[in-house]
Length: 213
Image (cartoon, rainbow, N blue to C red; front, side):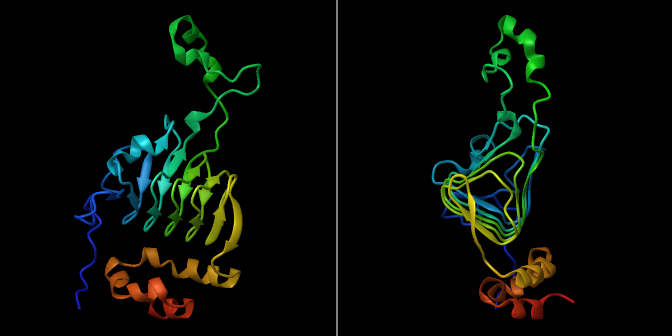
């Protein structure tokens, strides 16, 4: 049996499927952190992920995506740079238009933000989902197609809708605690490789049994 792990440094893990890219070797922005093996799938141009899928990213907030995440086509992360003033008669950002309006740029500084957007490990994003600024998505979560995520998502939660609501959790509370304790995504890649079948289709008991000691 070939126990050679997959290479996390290649851009296209499936040479005959250029629509799939690993994000860690793709991203260049210091404001985006992605763990190994997380991938994005897009039939048009997956290599444009930083500009087409991470929007209004003017900093300093970060987008952090864990390991082994699957991002379907059209997943978008809206960052804090999209914020507008709402405390006056108009929300229009006049200063960015230039001219003499630029003298009022102070009206756009200090807008409230929600901080970094953080995605845990082993998260599956369905087609055309949107994540709003400052959201934290737990390990093992599933984001349903078309969902607009405005609030934090618990570990192993399944959410859907606009705004996204918790539908159910993938495991009960006790098993979620055990899965977080096992944290298979932090195992040495060789150990993951040897136990892929248990990770994908085994029970929590079986996963605990093969965890590194």
